[in-house]
Amino acid sequence: ATVYTLSGSTVTSIGNNIPQGSTPSILLLEYENQSPNGANSVIKSIDALVPADVTYKFAGSKTLNVSNANPDVSCAPPPSSYFSVVPTTTGGVYTQNSITGVKPEGSFCLYLAVTTSSTSCSAVNWRADANTGNSITGGQEFYDFNIQTQPYSLTSTTNGCSGILGCDTNS
Image 1 (cartoon, helix red, strand yellow):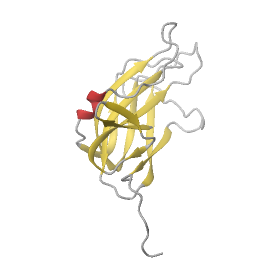
Image 2 (image 1 turned 120 degrees about the vertical axis):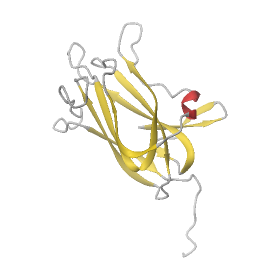
Image 3 (image 1 turned 180 degrees about the vertical axis):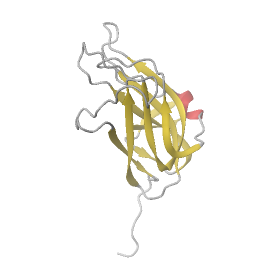
């Protein structure tokens, strides 16, 4: 999970921090098919469990598959046009079915416009699922590459930080 902000026409990564406020940031969730080259497991649907303190809206997505012409399938930063998307849904599950298949060693780039009203500046988990079926409820689940008994992956963002250093006046 990587969060991007826009200043003028410059898109900048700010790590995994979704800043407090109403100005949308773009969150990139990158789904990687880590099946070995030559395998036939293809991601065809994904979902993401969005934390309750995040308001979001789909901004864009892209499938990147390895080829001789495209050996690097890392997701690129979002285009500046994505920052005009206004988040409208708070928390819940975002699902995208019937995507262009992500072949072994490929990636799926999901860009969500996000805001948070949280002031806690705390880490929250996002759950991400991928499936071989054209719907998230069909086909076979993909298991986490690092925890191979877990049929989903977890990532986190830090929500609600304002970027302003505070001082404790009680010390």
